[in-house]
Image: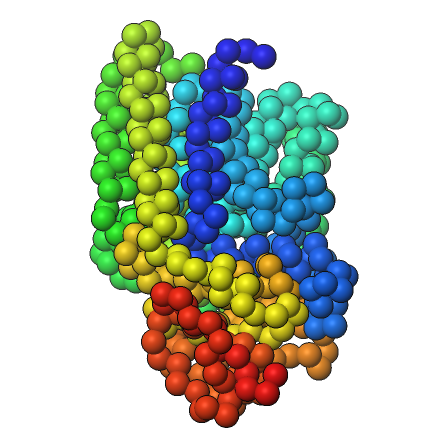
Length: 493
């Protein structure tokens, strides 16, 4: 193994720290994904009681790969550790996959260091894990495409075909950027390569056709695209770029390291003046990807069917796909830039870990005790009145879905959940819908508006955080209280 490969592997290992440094990272939708992985992995396990209520929808959605890989890993390390490994694959895999792309385009591999501070971003902290998990796969696929387009061979074509399919089944937006990158790099000036170069993408294009024409999620998304309007006026959208990309901590210390990273990038660009560009001509069209992300961010709306934050999602890939446009100078100047970029990468990761540890130690509280106090295989509603954090930006509600940790540990039914939404890989069995399904819009955000008729007598427990739940004495009584967590048990259960 080359020393440079060992070096970047160690960098990637450091980059994974936010995924495993604490048991409960403050990622808003993370509990959903761990619970969904539990539902899939233990669907037939009577200890969790899932089969009577839920059915799997794995082949009715493109949100598949994250859970399939997690399911396989769970056989060896368990569900919770499997999800940690998947987050590590994103955090560490992004710079490694970008390095592979840079090498395929004959660009300086050291540029991949700039991806480390950007990997922990707003979308990651929202817990949009299948979405961000698609980024390293997108970069790997584009690296395979660059090599195949340059010299088409059977083995390279097979690698590209497999990676394109895998990216599709991770998330449709990274796959769309993959398609755009393939168009930008395609050997248009050499018609003799067209068939061999494009053939590996045929299967993934058929999958797109299936998604659009044969799935509820795809059909709804395409219908929604026809009525898109910008999520904000242009001046406001530009002002909000940090809000949707890099500003995830309340104290703005994350922004300090992003500014330092930008200064390093500008210095690197300036110090490269006069150096010969050794990049492949294929890289000339790369600018199309960040430009497309910027246009999408400014022109698309904040909803696409049931999916929230649609246009806003393009802010993060706009930054990540801009990295190959940078340059690193040669000689001692390049070594200096590399060392500073490495320092920024490590420092930003340490800063994130310190804040995650603060969240775990000072804000999570006795969640484990609350879960332990409830019997397994029960119906649990989560009413989170106090959902914000003093660590994370006020954009997030890290505690919003913590009730899903009950399902991870003890099975049963939990609400709020994405179960029943067309794009989700788990659905309810016919006739097994909770009384609050279909959910009123923003059900989970407005616990004070949830009527008692939706809770009693279906739910065995109500897990609350903060004050606000005042049930009749003949409906629920408190059975556990610690800090801000209270478990309310149904009377007569």
